[in-house]
Image (cartoon, rainbow, N blue to C red; front, side, top):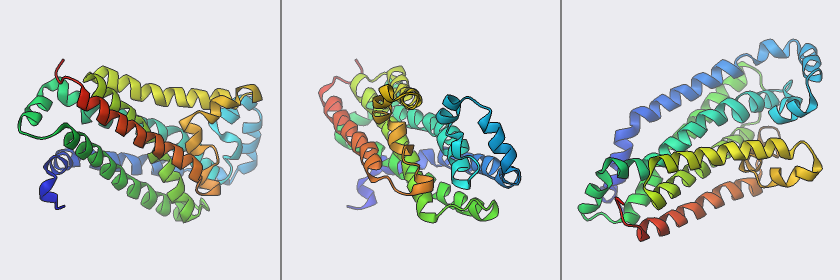
Length: 268
């Protein structure tokens, strides 16, 4: 199959290249801003540990501050587990919503389908465009982290950089898939936006509550946030079971999107 048979994919990538570039720059800038501060903090590691010890243990566990004095712990708690999570949550719901729901509310989806393009093709090519753009951003994350790892002496293994990037992108893909599915099922932009955002917010809350007591540990086990970061990929490397859950659930949601999209009357 040549790229000439993928006009929707090529059109989407061409129309979104600027926003993808903006996200790449924003990602690199945020990582540089936060991770670049590590050398100044690590020089006073005892003071940092004393500060953390003075905080409530529940707050320390929720924010992942218990290992912030290490390069991997610092990168996890400041960027991947917090700021990066927020940035890519926004990205996930915006891109997932745009795939079907936004196009349908504008009335342009019906025009596309009127040209003999199947619904399956629209769905798959636009989901593929999301994955390609995320792959490009993943390269930016790994490249930026590698540079900062040397400059800020974070002491993170390269394989672990790939592991945490796949974890962050897995969360993004899962949330985007929820938005795609709701857009395919309803054609409503607000439904797609709220569902994708709701999954990520609920995931974070479940992970936070699940870490407070053994009786609530089931909440952490069911949280996609915990699937991504529960086994600390920056420090320990690949968590294949967690990655399998993230990408497996996302794939199931895309299959559900295909079924729902092909059964619904467009524009109603």
